[in-house]
Image (cartoon, rainbow, N blue to C red):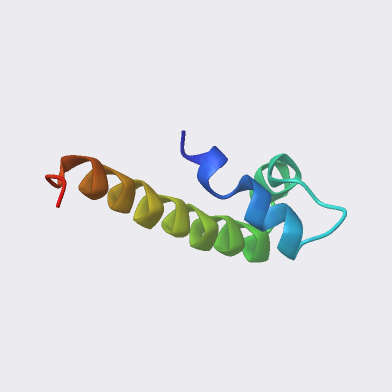
Length: 59
């Protein structure tokens, strides 16, 4: 579920690139490693928000 939370936004912000491209480049590029770390943090926040929303009782 993680990459699916950010794939569309990443590819919209970085036309012509895919999240998989970034993952491959992150193994040898400090800049791409940092970018992947930032996007992964966004996915974690979105996943936490989704879990919180599911756990909250309906109003």
